[in-house]
Image (cartoon, rainbow, N blue to C red):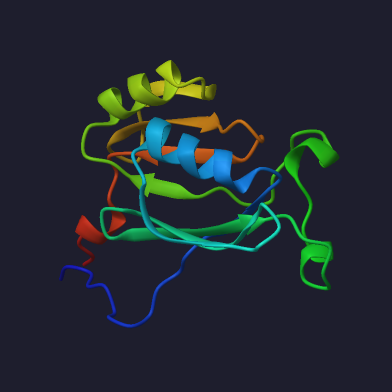
Length: 144
């Protein structure tokens, strides 16, 4: 029986950037995201942005000194470590890898065929956030 995506229930990663406007431009150029909505905060930053890739979405904004903002830290503040990593399903992993690499993505795991199926790679964006891209699509998997 094939898995089905439950309409109305989804997970959307949310990230914070020091220079959110530059991050948006880079994420679109390097990873192929497109702008769905970008709301400036009136102080040169981004209050809220939504970027899409296929049927997925990423929300991001500028780092803020708020109650919620103080719950988050940037990778460079903790030795480049992360506690999560968005995984994005791409149709042509090799082409995506080459595009990201050409845009200056720091490659963490080179493009390779994966034991669990598909192929992909991992990299960091200019502010150090860790990303994984691959052709493995868990929604296409069937269960018995």
